[in-house]
Length: 271
Image (cartoon, one colour):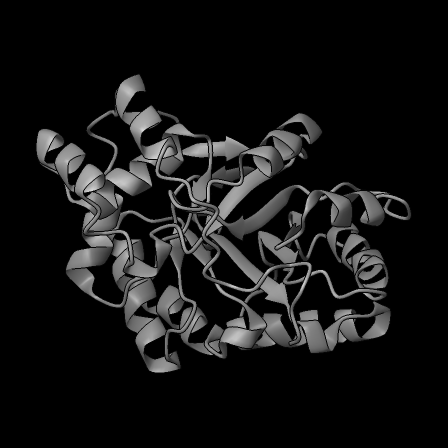
């Protein structure tokens, strides 16, 4: 399996990375360092996570060449709008201690604001300070609304996605539109790690349920960013390139879907 996915603009994005949602600043530094040392090249953060400084410090401590890393951050809802998006991006870069990010995302589809935010993001992209731009938590109709004024199509849509929320229709739309699918909360926030189907498949391959889920994402052409603050778990989550799920096993996992959303619905959120 290729370890990167080519985005619509030709950028190569790693298919497996580290997420740092709900990770304290001090823990983010260690987690990022451990991840890079374990072979990860994709790190995903956001302004609202309040750990961009810690992520930047982890990158520096790890000592990896900047061009070998793919760093994502996101524009928070309170900062949406044309001028405020430009300002928020500058502040994120400063906290990260970087000259550019590899991917900048609109975090949520704030009604009446995301088109103006996108105009700023297009300018940021054209300046070279974001090598790719995209969205997060956008349904199909949000993207269609965005495209009414956009010059550049989003390259990625990062959405809640795991075996109990497979979002097949949205994934099909994104694939047809040439927009890469990325999963947040790919392990269902740990709630499905005891699922008998996943445990049994893992036993067959001498892997954990978490490794099975990550592999399912990869084989489904989904970019995936599991989170952990534990060094051994971070290493374990990356150890998924030496086995393959059969078509039958993939179907079994697909069959676990119950449309169970653990986060907010992008059509109904109040933050």
